[in-house]
Image (tube, rainbow, N blue to C red; front, side, top):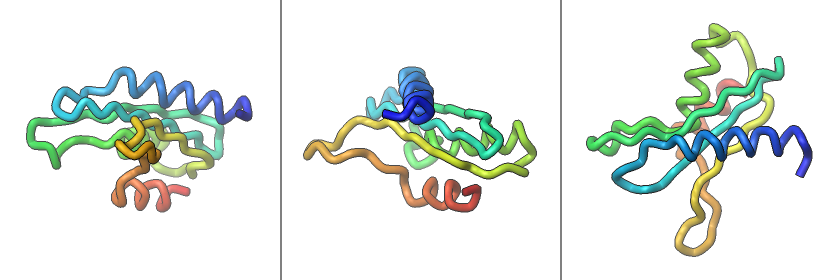
Length: 104
């Protein structure tokens, strides 16, 4: 794995370990690198009102916007999540894919 991607993978994995996921146990971490080289990583944060939880990807995008005023682009994204029951990789939800797309 390329060192720059390994860096993002490590940041996403570390974020996932800080996940607040007492209801699903599904720990997700996301790390984004901006075109300026800044890295923002965030875990998912669940809420008992399950649809009101915060996705890791949305949290990382929000951190980026709060830190930069939103005047920056995403260059790379790594998301870590447990594999599905069939071994398939986890992927960002549609809302998070849209957020990533709008800032990419």
